[in-house]
Image (cartoon, rainbow, N blue to C red; front, side, top):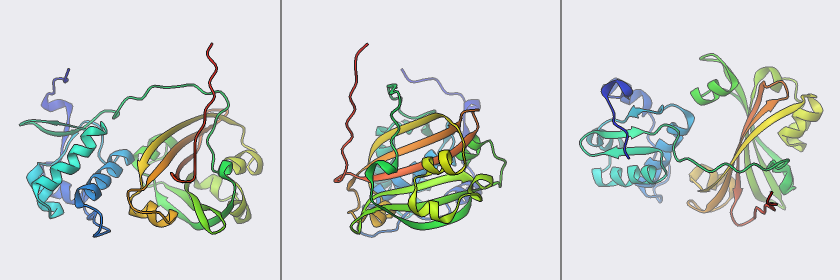
Length: 265
């Protein structure tokens, strides 16, 4: 059953100024990828980062199609992808709304099972270490203030010059400054947190999801755009409950298989 919506339940992007601010950059980075897919990927990223918050009403289809320079048919194809993924709800004569929480997934508890980039072995190639502004989603996780920066470490796991996985780790600067560069070139972040920084780790929340590679991921993993990848997202807390790290890992779909052995109680 669709929930009843009142105007007080949602925020709106009706002004041209607010739309320009949120959609300043155009999503078209590759002329060989369908525009509807690039728009869907662009909007998905803004929803997942928290820039487009739950309950938000998106601009009208006509306004969005004009902004992106595409037909309304192309825009509707993009919105249909997001609706199928459970990220938005489209209601006739009312508009398109960002969903609260997206698709619900069944939780399975696995004791002691943490997917980590160390599991694939291989050499590590450091792409970049940089400061970046925390998205609203990461501000909420780390409990940081607006404008507070995080350190992002981007790396590749390699085997004989073939990329196996693309890793992005996000840490508070107070932790990142104590990590030697040699460790970043040779160790997983969980190993660094436990052994170099001597942080007793507590709860680790991890999500595994089948995705297709966008142009950035495809470029780093040396695979085709839209090729299958396994996306793993991890939130790490210390034993005292303090948030210490967030990571995003993309594994090549043609190089990995995930096997879980479960025992019924």
